[in-house]
Length: 147
Image 1 (cartoon, rainbow, N blue to C red):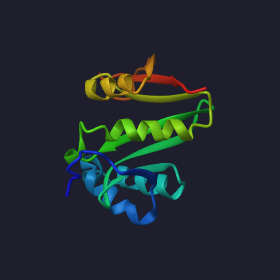
Image 2: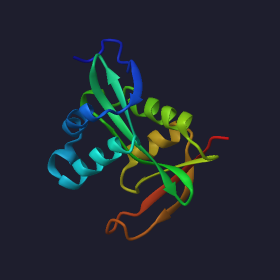
Image 3: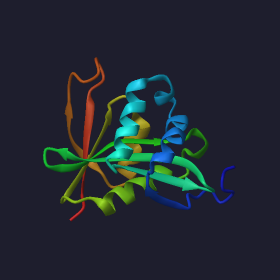
């Protein structure tokens, strides 16, 4: 059941018992073993935050610490039932609060205009692009100066 106030009650560290719920809310993960392994590993390394609403996982974020010696938002996924309700912004704010470096990086495909708008709304600014990761769809890199 979705919270009638359309708010996520809290963000916390993902726990091993959350893995199946995170996979279930991520349509890509349900179809791709590599994403399921990525989620499991991120939770095991304590690099995954989960947005919880009414005891349900509404979305998750993976925060890694190895992007050219800077923190990096490797993935943000929000359940379709919770999209456009500020869940991703709350997850990004939590990642920023945990950021151990002066800059927090994130990226998305050039074709993903929704993610680009969300990053801009969260205060990230363009920082370049990477060619040849996905054929014909460059990766746009963003940065947020946190200190």
